Image (tube, rainbow, N blue to C red):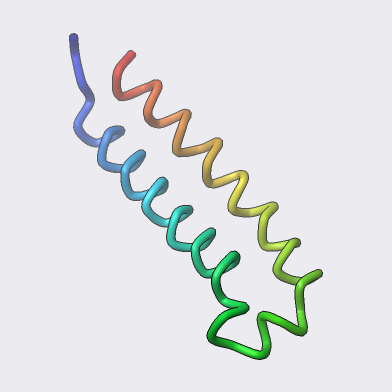
Length: 65
């Protein structure tokens, strides 16, 4: 098995970033009034997060070929 370290690290970084963004998107309502009042805007943040997940998966597939 040939693991591309660069692709693997990019994959991990992208997945870590998406998990942090999703955590704030879901739990922000508990520590910020802005999150409570702007649920529609927060739902729109799900679009770029979804693209990041797609790119992370793509790099993961490239890493493990």
